[in-house]
Amino acid sequence: MTLQENDVSIVLPVEGYANVVRLVTGGFLSRCEFDFEAIDDIQLALDLALRWLPVDGTRVTVRLVADRAGLTIWFGALVAASAERALTDVVRDGLELGTVLGRLVDRIELVDGGAPALILRKAHEAVTG
Image (cartoon, rainbow, N blue to C red; front, side):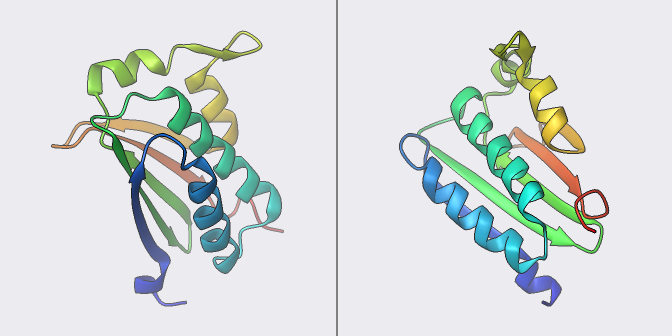
């Protein structure tokens, strides 16, 4: 795949479209040679983001960019102050959202560059071989 083929974005309603995000993510990552476990981790991370993070409006953008080093996911636009608090919400078995996401991906970052977003990074080395 060329670098241009390794970049996909979808904009969809927040409610009721988690399966579409899973489908697009799974198809894109399988083309980028991520293994099943990595795809499952990333899909779960996006499911959690859709369920728990406060989106600014009724639609969310999910952008997936793969390169030789791994995958970067841009998820937004978020309500910045509420998103920071949401990462400390307990979501399961006493674990905070940020902790759970940190177990599924290699890096989590909230950015506020015009459109606040959650950036997730999954290294390719950690998921191959």
